[in-house]
Length: 101
Image (cartoon, rainbow, N blue to C red; front, side, top):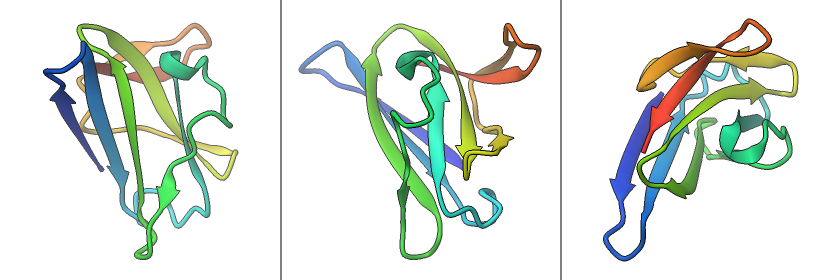
């Protein structure tokens, strides 16, 4: 897995790129990116499946903020990002990944 961030000079946003290998996604057919930025909506940010079976997704988030997020594979299996900026316990007891922009 990997996360790359780029703060844009033209506007106060951070472009964040997420990438997950086929093995990390446990050979899922679909992976969604859920978090504070999309109200944890499993349909809002579906990652793009690449030819090699990996997944990628780019999103622009306001710069200078932090967001909790997790990945959801095939609508049933949650998994985490080892390269997250931090971790925070959510209101339902799960530990969420944190990304800071």
